[in-house]
Length: 241
Length: 79
Image 1 (cartoon, one colour):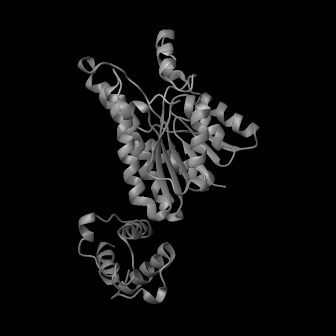
Image 2 (tube, chains in turn green, brown):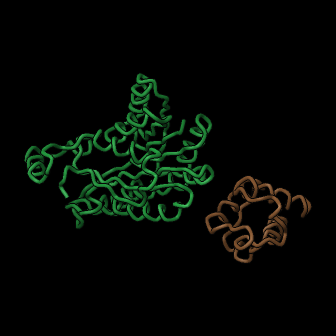
Image 3 (cartoon, chains in turn brown, blue):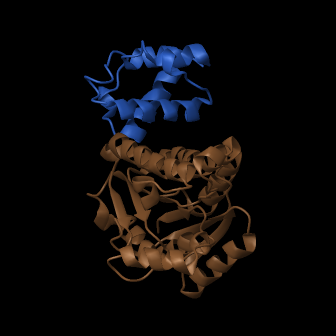
């Protein structure tokens, strides 16, 4: 059985992806702060007769990424499917944005995905099969007030992914980006009812998205059936864009 | 390690990592023309060399490497 690593797999969209991939892969559930949350996801996967392990991975640290990969390789062999989902937001309008807030968001969301992708690609090149999936955001494609850092980091993933798609196509490694719209997670829980109503107005499908809406497409992109799809950006946003 | 030992190891890596016919791997063989290794293939070979011999190879060191023999000599000089 092939193995999938989901960074930020203990909560929100990452959790839904981990559970869905647990149906067809060994799953390494990456967590950065909450081991407990990671292990809950593992339990849920194992309840459905899947195989999973919670693994600490802080994508801002090359050493932490290396340690996590070594541990996963020991348990399952190499990683065949990498889902780069770990991300943070530190919102502020540009005149008030601190350089620290810029750096942290870029370092986690964009550079973190570089670190994991570079580490994962070696095994994928050897086995001549791989799937890399980036969880970006429609904000990375359209921009958003107060999110210059977040939007730039998520847009950066598009260039990263498309370049990997070109570099690695000859080795049957595909790389794609998912751009979720408004999905019901901790990250969108700060929205006021008024903001939610505004969003609903603009949606073609009149509901806020569920993490499972994303997980289903990730599951397809991780499968053999998706082998002719690479370098793409797929928005899953209820038609808001 | 003797040059011919390095060559044997290199030959094994070409055969195992890239599935190249062992007979084709001679000291004179050109990587791109004779062995039909693409640029990504060169990277794979270099990564395999680094793992096998426990060394690091800079990109600059590779600019003059066009044949198996030149790769063997580079590796031999670094061991």
